[in-house]
Image 1 (spheres, rainbow, N blue to C red):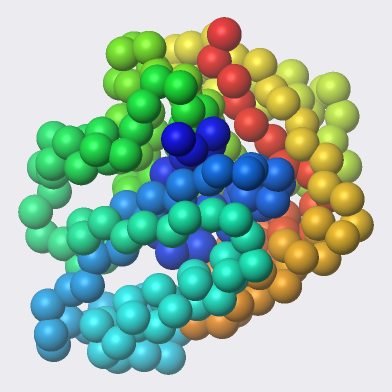
Image 2 (cartoon, rainbow, N blue to C red):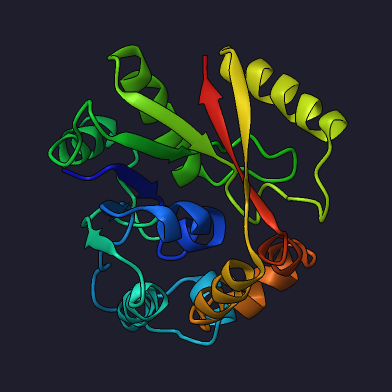
Length: 230
């Protein structure tokens, strides 16, 4: 039985956004949902920007990076075969994704889904999973939501004014009452998070650039957040 289950849209989201949960959990399952390998010959603009024109090779590299980032944690790491939005042509896959996810879920585990309410950019794969999380909440699963970095930016210091603003935004977007749990990271945990995040070398530099530095700033925050439905 896993005490916590993290739904990670892509091969880095769990580490970027949920490091405290990863470090604290004795029994943790990370489900990397959109981690499927595209058809041979696939190439995308993002992969080329990141220095790899062969998308099959890129996904294999990213899986290896993910294993390196998590190899000193107690997590169990699994990969589903659904394609990242940049690779897939079939968009109406909600039922298939939910059916596959349900194989690993139970109502005794706390299950973390991406929040996907950024005012800057919301990745469609993150929105997709958030909506499944909302459906499962209605089915009485223990669902919480995490701010998906770098789409959601975490300032260096958190205060009640910022927390209240985030609560209001989340409640407006989700049509749901929530509280926020602030998870403080020790200096050692901050350091280990930076080391883990650096393992995603195929993505980190360009993601930080296109997010205007929000990735590095958020990775260096001394806290993480969870949005808890009331």
